[in-house]
Image 1: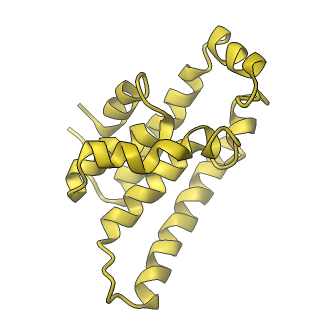
Image 2: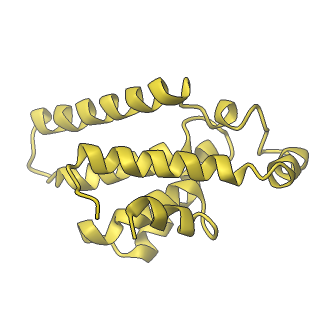
Length: 148
């Protein structure tokens, strides 16, 4: 099962950030429970603020884990991670035209009951699954992961 498939499956139970981070967590020594705890507030564009898509936030956390950054690492290591994040976000924006959860979900306001109802009724979770998949596939590409 691909990381994208795992993330989509996890997104049935958890938020977008939790799903993407948890799909990769064990690969980097982070247990699933800690990954879920770390990512819980980032879903729906950070606590339903609908800023940066939560799947992107999860992917950025994975890029941080993959960097194996250590306390003694210097500014060049930080800059290396920033460059990967910058590239990652640009590729997402090139595909979808935005990074914002609000825009990706057709202006559906998840901070209101009416918006949450619309999200369910219009089955917008399927849109989120698409973003989860793209985020994981792009991560695999940037991390040079081979797929079965």
